[in-house]
Picture 1: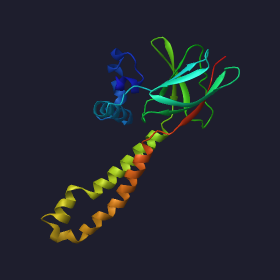
Picture 2: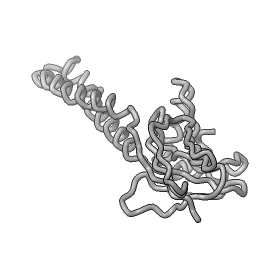
Picture 3: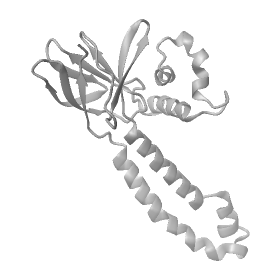
Picture 4: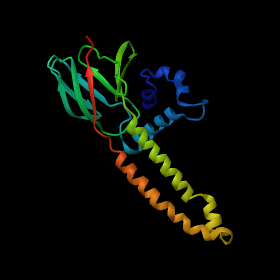
Length: 209
């Protein structure tokens, strides 16, 4: 369930007790709630999986593979105590990238300013490692919000009435200004199209002693 995934819940029986994490007041969605709703819509309408991408480390074989992402490059240290991985997600997502290990554990102390950051949490008695990097996702959200605002001003009910409709004799001379929104909207749509393609991400993962 994509909502459970976003809240970090693997046991659906506990989802109800944590549902408030998705709303401000039990009714109106907060940022996390909208992100969960977006995952559901994306899965139902576009067929894109709403599960977290997975980065799989096999220390014994010194190999790296991915699920829901493409591993572009990986380089293990000679002592196999760390690996530098460059990967690209299939689609942008607010979900963190999960890291699985054949054996051992990861250091989760990230350097200041490092992205993505590494965290761990316990799920059903097992430690789950996650890579958090939402800069591009948040940038895309910001661009979409700005484009929607510009489009709202271009097309709003008042425009139909006062600029093009039965009351255009009052303010109809301002109708020519509406087209001036178009270049801004087209520019933002172009930037949205470019930003929605996930960028390659490079991270160095260190194994705990």
